[in-house]
Amino acid sequence: MSTGRVECGGDKPFHTVINAENFHALQALLFADEGQVDAIYIDPPYNTGATDWKYNNDYVDENDMYRHSKWLAFMERRLKLARRLLKPEDSVLVVTIDDKEVHRLGLLLEQTFLDAKIQMVTTVINPRGKYRANEFGRCEEYIFFVTLGDAAVQGEPDEDFSEGETVPWRTFRRSDVTSARGTSKGGTGQFFPIYVDRRGKVAEIGDPLPHNVSRSSAPTRPGCTAVFPIRFDGTEMNWGLTASTAQKLLNKGYLRVGRATPDKPQAYEIAYLTSGRIADIETGRAAIVGYNPDGSVIARYVTHKIKMPVSTWTRPSHNAEVNGTELLKMLLGEKGFPYPKSLYAVEDALRLFVGDKPEALILDFFSGFGTTAHAVMRLNRQDGGRRRSISVTNNEVSANEQSRLRARGLRPGDSKWEALGICELITKPRLRAAVTGQTPDGDQVKGNYKFVDEFPMSEGFEENVEFFTMTYETPRTVAHNRAFGAIAPLLWIKSGSEGRRIDEVTDDFAVADTYGVLFDLDFSRQFLDTVHKSESVRMAFIVTDDERAYQMVCAELPAHVMPVRLYESYLTNFVINTGRE
Image (cartoon, rainbow, N blue to C red; front, side):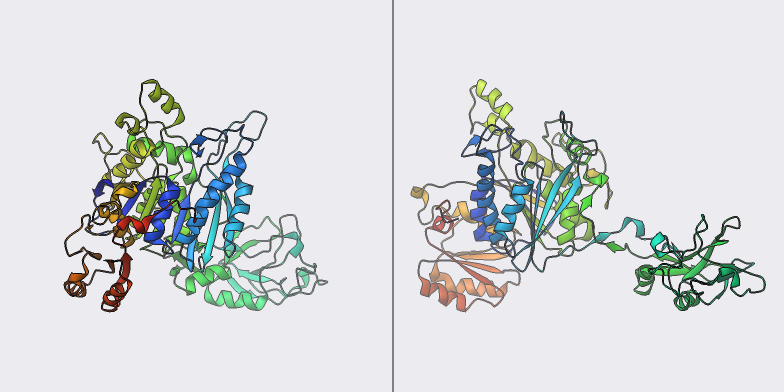
């Protein structure tokens, strides 16, 4: 059942937010998106012993001797469904967790995703650390990346080599003592004179000297200083490359003289471009924009250089207090926000896997405050993508709030009770504010987005969002022509969450932007003619209990249209909680 929408994205697909118990929502989503999800990001309950999650409708506290096994059973059922939703050929599951269950979760993931590659990242989310008496202050969380098929980390821009930055030079003298002259690692071909003339330019590359030959015996060159790789303490080192290779770099302008140090054993600093920096120039990532007086190149990066991220993240953008709690306050004002994720932390994690997939489908079935959907909108803005997200959350009211509401005689289902649930109080207004750039009070959102893409939050996003509440129908209502409205959103989601939705049964058939539904087989010919005339229809739902009649219609559909059979008792297609999962 739809409970509202925000439309600011033109013909872009809709992000969907589903208010439901997530296990049942996952079962329903199997119909719509089994094997079609590019990325799943989840931040499940951490099982801290506080009132952060329920098992069989009861909070699990720290005194429950079975709380770890209950948590594992709770997670296993959902992870098994998640595995079926992911694309087996190329997808990723991202799971965040803290120290309470990190080890058990790691084993559970290995057990559930036997054919996947699993990596773990440590991320600092609270640099100050959380105070714990007589214990280390906890400042980090952990992120599991479970990759299926060909999915792999794509890399990210290196802040040290960003667009417009000068390509850096490295000192030509080896720095590690194990590579000093005379050592086995040092070799015999990398101790040689570099002759620097009075203009501070390399005039010649000399021949290497054997280990047992004094550098004072090297030939002299008129008007030049013979520069050897000598540390400040007088230790003879080696150059980074052989003499012949150094000559090749010099010829291309990749070797240069730095500042003069006449009071040091090495009279001039010598620098060069490493093979990686040279590759940047020769592949076009960096461009030569000029030359120094000595003939060495001046090069700048044309685009960001890409690096592979490390397994420990200490990024200011991932501070949960500043970029989670404070960001939500900008959008919604002063409300209680129990530990929201940093928007940019979620964005960064997803970018590593869907940055090159502008039409990716991303699912979060522990959506909470809607951070994942918000992060996907940020990604779309950065590259013009049409990624869509499905967020599953519930309308759970906090334990403390429940006590106060019950004292007032209120119960779940009462409007005043439901208004204080997480979906109604935070998730929906947060995403409305993010898209429109206006707070729930109608004021412009103050503040700016930071990192990667900086702009005023009041600009909002060119995105569409629709909110749904999952309903549970009784068998009595599951009769022909009586339950179609309950499943209509799933047909629309399965077809890409784009354009108009078919919400009601007709006497013959209905065709929307991306899909059509044939309700009466007597109108098959007219339905097929309409579908053939449309270039945007990609799915056809055919309502019939007759397998032979269904196949006859399928045979005449265009090749690009996928047929899906619906039983005449519509909800029979969506029976859940049968013990099969």
